[in-house]
Amino acid sequence: MLSETPIELRSAKPSVTMRLVKWMISKRPPVFPHKAQDFVAYMADREEPVDAQMPGKFEQQFRVEHWEAEGQKLVTLHPKSGPADWHMLYFHGGGFVLPMFKEHWPLGAELVRQAEVSITFSLYKAVPEHHYAEADRLADAAFAKIAQSHDPAKIVINGDSAGGHMALSLALRLARAGGPQPGKLVLFAPWLDVTMADEAMQAVEPHDIMLKIGTLRNCGAMWAGDRDPASPECSPLYCEAQALAQLPPTRIFTGRHDLFIVDSRSFVHKLRDAGVDAKLYEYEGAPHVFMAVTPTPEAKDTFRLVREFLEAG
Image (tube, rainbow, N blue to C red; front, side):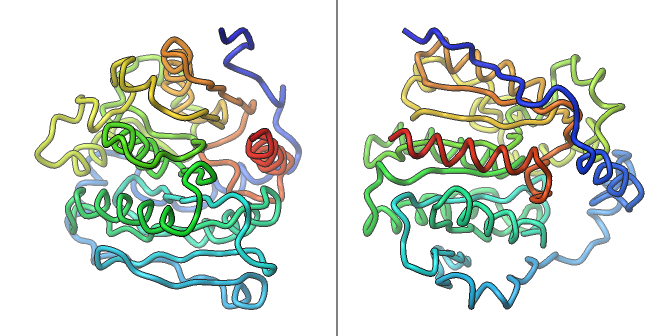
């Protein structure tokens, strides 16, 4: 019987550092256009994007492995001392349409240092130039490969935003397959419903400096391809309790100035109702994927909680 509250507010107001960072982000050009019609035009004219290169200094700071699966690239960062007790398989965000950001590399580095994990980044190919099934095949193959040399019970699957969706979807596929299962699931601001159906998001949208509902619906449609965007396959928020009940212990981290906070709250209750050990940590005033701003107190608190979650066994 789960008696602990499923939602915990970790910070009642944003730190000074976080407020400064949000102001700086608000002054920069958006990652992609905020208006839906501008986004469609942008995607029609773009050249296929490429992943941000790993900082060269990582070769000295970590034990680095470059490898491939399903014709796509992965990079593993181990502590300098060697493979950690826990291995994290990580999926980066970017609306399914963007590659690895430069900000993802230091996020991964801090997870290695602060959460004391090895981490593998899936450098999956983005839509619409590539099919969603290619990314899914890479995720499946990556987990299978890691599980050959690392106890699956000590593998944690993680991802941010669209990558959180991919991490959750992988965990659900593994549960259905009935083979080796990950020990834990961590989700950073996961995208749980690509249709953005909950009208409560409209009240959050003016505070979200990064995400806009119309643009996200277009991203979601590109990811869905020939599938129904509102199906559980495309929008895990709508998975039945029977499927959710098979998930491992799960922790979700989301800022309150993030559109995805709405579905994260709904989802953590669904997980708990299904009997899953699940909890949502919220941060007041924090933007989308705030933990990528690694120097902030909010990010440091996230890394500490992830480490404690894994240390709990």
